[in-house]
Image (tube, rainbow, N blue to C red; front, side, top):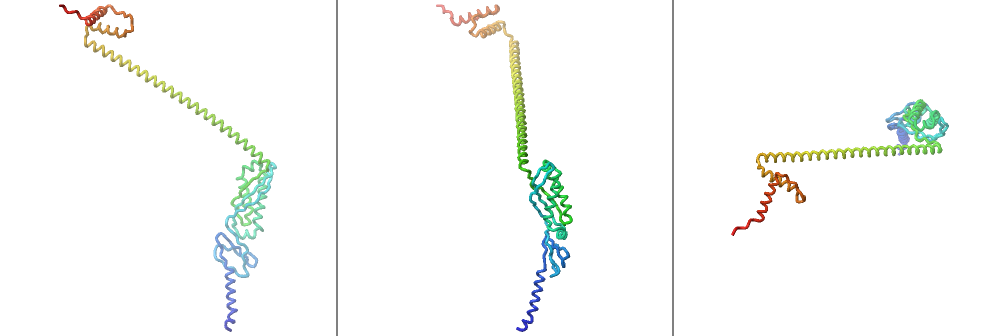
Length: 305
């Protein structure tokens, strides 16, 4: 028992030393840096890994994040070249590149960046009129980024981008802009409507033209086909007539047969409708002979007793 009390201070000392060691062991995470001071003065900057701080002599002055950060500042009143007061809010994207300069370069770095961005914005907008402010966002962003990056370089800060989030002109200016945009939209609508009507008229005229051309081509083709049909019919008739004459010439008909065919032709021409037919003298005898034959057939002579 006496031995335990004699060893107790030693055990307590060992435990105290272990606690002090554990408390002064630091693990620096990725994208972080620890600024270390020794006896109140800057000593070193710890990067990623395991580190041990000297108890009671060194201390962690600041833990710095090396990630890209976003600072969204509230709207700032600015005056344009043509004396229009607007509210503009900015967003600054920056990254700490030197933890030592960031820690000891300026007091309250975020407040310093906000004040610097406000004054820079006023200087740039003061050289532009309202229309230029509304249409030149990229130019304003570029100028602000360059100026802020140069100004914050001694603070260990790198400005990557500066964006104008909102540009809010006075209410009367907004009303005037809305009326102007409405008039412009109506003008464009009228132009588009007129162009549409013009296009429709052109298409309709072209359609009528194509239709007329097709009708003319169809009529032309019909007339050509009709003419070809008539020509073929005439040619067929002429061929038939020529063939008939050839056959007649080959048959060598007698004069009486020819006159009889002529008489049949006159009878066919009358068709029972003509009341008077003029018959040439050379076939009148043949007609009388034919009539006599018909009578003899109808009334045969009586037999003698």
